[in-house]
Length: 453
Image 1 (cartoon, rainbow, N blue to C red):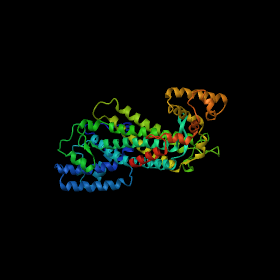
Image 2 (cartoon, rainbow, N blue to C red; image 1 turned 90 degrees about the vertical axis):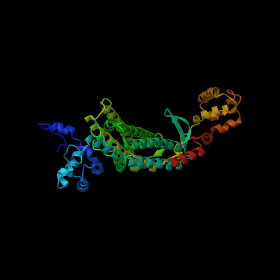
Image 3 (cartoon, helix red, strand yellow; image 1 turned 90 degrees about the horizontal axis):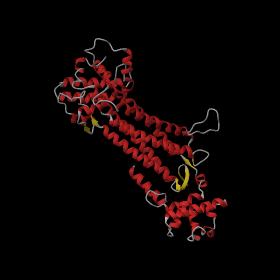
Image 4 (cartoon, rainbow, N blue to C red; image 1 turned 60 degrees about the vertical axis):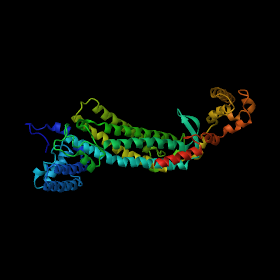
């Protein structure tokens, strides 16, 4: 069955049928198709296209179609819209009644409406998965508020921090991801139904009433824009690609920190795999797969951007390519988010190993700040500390092992109080500004994170 072809004499070439068929992926929109057909049929009754009896027949038929679709029957139609229309005609005694349902409607506005409806529903579960991962991060941060370790820039040790600060850094990145996904969901809830093929509906249907029945938040105000724009999908794919990038960076940190060279954390065996050759291996495959999937998410965004960038305004068949990247992105997020949540919830931290990684050079900035508090301009203090570090290196000792008299070679302001500089815990506690790493600042941040959730 085809929904077109009256003016054609020849059958479509089989290879053309294969190229144009979308039933393999758009069948997941089947229940949205049925739901929209119900709402649209009611609206056709409201404008006099259908009688009460015809509407009742159609709604009963759609109930039977929905029940049959739940058995996952094989479908060989061109697309899900054709399949539902065929099944509806077969489910009622008078197929002529079923043929009234598409009155004033096109696959253009039907397809867009289905995908928007599906997207809003699918994003609800995605948002919940992000929220659960955020909760896991906050709970983990609460358990390691005082676990000291080196903080890194350029993959080199910089200053002492607490492990909670890294976990909370992930939280805030994911919270922005959640905001982006929520915005994409809201943008999807604009109703395209009633736009027809491009010029609108001539039968006086009430699009506002359709939007209310179907759960849309607004009506798209321009019929051509309604059927041709895909920026709401690009927004979703962009938000998902950014989320994937943040998950990938988290994965990279945990992969590094769980290696023997760092040993800061241990990935639970439930989220690790072994080697087929080397019996001793415990590989962080969960995190490597999440890191790898981020490339897939970015690729889906680039794929649809490339498809739509040169299209003229209005519907073009190229737009059939909008669904697979979206479906794949949603499926990918539904795979990776629960795994990352599981990794975080079961993550073990090795406080002793983190502590052993602390070294006096991490306190060089604190030494400069010691001089600042005595009135030295920071840039000058920075230069003095550089000389102190060179002196310690030449002597083969830690900078904290230099005597006060040796330090006074570089500044007369050094006194016995300099000993307090070489305390990692005090260094952390001095970073007490909002968003800092002191215990008070961490607790404040955890409270803010909990409020966000």
